Image (cartoon, rainbow, N blue to C red; front, side, top):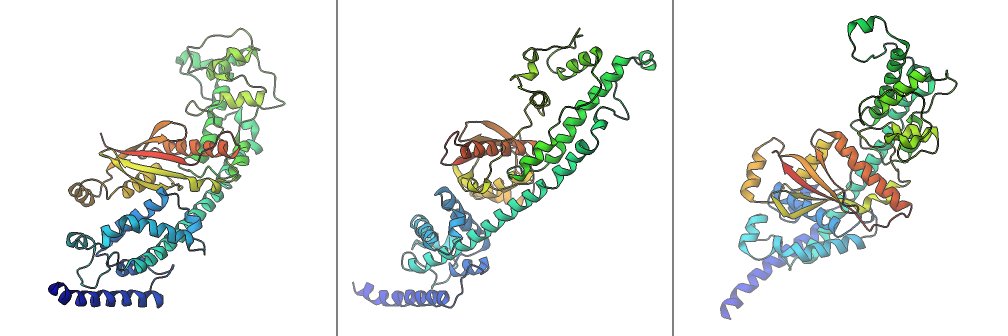
Length: 430
């Protein structure tokens, strides 16, 4: 007891000095929403940038996994930020600022008056609360900027692609250089009327497909309401006031549209029953509907369901990211717009960079080459599974299509979902 009595006063004095110093910094405004991140690192006594970066990622993942809204925490009311900071430190405060020497050596600077848990719990909680405020404001601004950028791009590029259909519809059936099937030279010297119309019909189908696909190449900004009218304007419409098609042209057109469903067969006369055409299922109610059903991209309809208010759903949508080699640990990432599939995989790789074996992490940090080549995606609300490959932006567009249609169905009351979870398992090169 005498030893304890002789050592405790000095230790209590050091802690009191540390507490007074932290309180003085907070009162003087050392930490604010606009303060640089290195001030938070210094205040919390985290020893280097890597430790602080891992601490920040852990804080963001905790907030997202526990359904704290970045939009709400970015507001003036500190209640949500305080609740999140309190719960987070209840789980990780002792891990970072506990009394164990090995823990303090791992995370904190080597000074005697560093923060201590739970002695400095009040000041650490206030600092983490301000840090959450700063992160929330940054994420809210980034989300508004991405929505504005997607809305701007959707209101310009699709309109340019739709212009040829509105101003020069006749060019779709009168190509300057008709594409003819591969035939012997003797037959090419004397083209028949049926072969000429075959070339025109072939060029018509290719023009509609390529023009519709170009505006969405390499883009994921498909969730804005302004894109709805743009997409409908690009939808190919039947040409009116044209010459009545001949028997030969109808036969040729039928064989071209069904080129993926069997060998070409001559047709004696036009078929009146659309149910006989395997590509026209389900049976369309009008000629416009039949055109939409028949013209396909990657064997899927071009039509996408668009939510009226995407911002009302993206707070409930998030990625849950794992490594294939470490499936028991996961990181959460809120829904964001990514320009390419490679950007998405790079961000996922960054989120899980602190998981797994420490020696393996060090080897990965020394290598500058991308580690993962694709991600296996599982949609929690529908059970759909597919992959997103690095450099294949159409895979990313497929993800956006699923998310957009799910938001639209939830908005229309077709089904109710508390969250839209996108599980991703990163796979290395095989």
